[in-house]
Length: 120
Figure (spheres, helix red, strand yellow):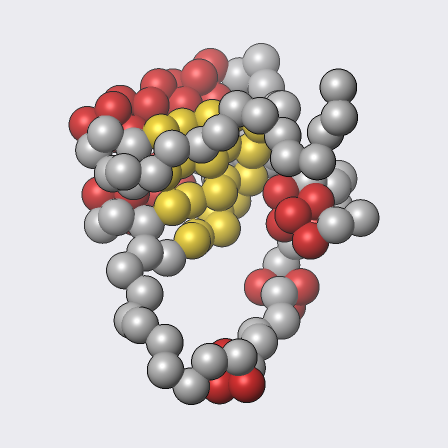
């Protein structure tokens, strides 16, 4: 299983302890200050969408896990509609990956609809 599969895929629920802080000092001594962050979110109800919207308005990218919501529940569609509106307002992008994840980007970031490494 590749790194992105571990981040974006899999049937297991992740916790903060599943992520390992890497020592960036060993990678680059002179790095520019980050202008965007990538947030991992778990959506369990409508209130969780507020934090996601705030992050997008702040210019950050969000990968939201919606597995705790039932896919046939109207709450999912309502949350997706809200996030779609935010992505439109900031000229960002949004995709739903299967039944378990939503990726929302801020201004100027587009999500490719083509998978890398797939030879068709």
